[in-house]
Image (cartoon, rainbow, N blue to C red):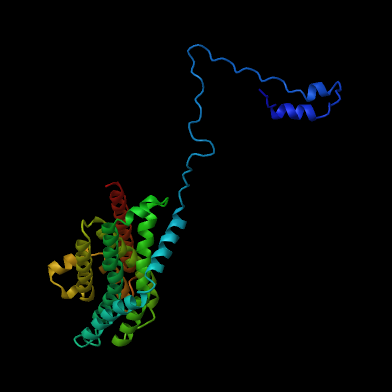
Length: 309
């Protein structure tokens, strides 16, 4: 039987001998491996890594900051509705301007209080149409389709999802409110000097009504109910906003005081008057801000409840 030599034996046989020096014996010769210390009696050995070789445990990404998450959701919602932005602006503005034209024939020209109430109510109606009605339908549809589960799996705060979506819908109403306010002022002969108050009114009314719309859409058990609630809320904002408080019955006045959007209407209506009570304007805007913060907090809790249900 012929024995095939090992490759290491062939290499050792063919390599020329290396001259030995006193230091080479200590540097080139590897010391034998020391035996592993035996475990003490009653002590378990250290557990070995059970993961396969070459793989690492999954790394959980850090939570995204609120500002970054809010900006991403806000831009995403704006991009999603870019195609329907012009029709949305037309519908939101057309119905409010139609109300201004309709009521122009039954109001006295010299009654600036009633005229300012009508213009302010029609302007806030644009915000209600977008931030209350459409946002309630949007969140209701997202919940019914299970699309909210996608946002809940992302490392973003739930408050950023609610606030980013609400802010995008409130931003849609900004051009319509400016068109309605300017058109109404010119149609009723009101002063434009106090129209700068439109900015804080639209912002705080948007926070208030978008918070309510988000809460309605997330709390409604079915998307149809969210749609009905949103449209009903917009109708209430319309009727209690354009009618002056002194022309309503007692029940209507109580309902008007309970509606948060009427405080935004009163704040904007004061801008069309020759003498403005700024303390009352600030108080009305503070009510809008407080209701908006509370409604957004309820919407955030509702979103978390959807994720755990």
